[in-house]
Length: 237
Ligand code: PXP
Image (cartoon, rainbow, N blue to C red; front, top):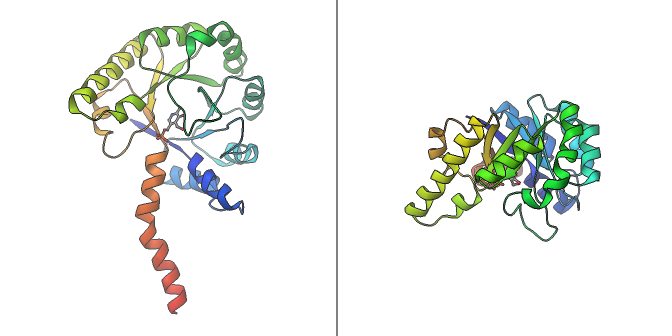
């Protein structure tokens, strides 16, 4: 199973001071050096974390695979066609949300979806739909021309009992099998952490997981002792 690393949070931290550091590109290159198979970023309508220039620099410099998460808007379609990421992941987007909440409402947008996806696919860009692990959403993704689905694992990550977790994992497993047998590539993401990722090893249909928050949160804690030692070395010298 491959790992795609989402660098949005690095941009959030950078934007807190607006002085260029930490740089999402530097984080992306470190992720690649550390074994990530792809870099994910979400260019939001309000540019609250990743900005257009970040996307351009990521496109120029990363050597694995760029997955551009975006809303289904004409502006984003144009940006994707200009940037040519290896993959576009269509996500729902609400201005007021803290993170992507729930899967793409594929039924509601279905009438315009095929038309939206077509020029991307014609340009050789892969298109993944971030959907709930449900058969109907998978069928509609396929019918609209997507070649991949990303199964939303948010509900799984929020389960508080073993029983609920096992049930949700079953739902994800069945959806992954169904999607794969329908000819789609399958990835999974949202809310995955060192504590809940292990069962995904057994779902062979899921080829990749996409993780952001947990890696960045852990990086801060794991990295904090080294960052403090570095400054102490300098002030004590
Ligand atoms: N996949 C998609 C489509 C997302 O929108 C997100 C959140 O940005 C993730 C994966 C990663 O979720 P998390 O940050 O919880 O690991």
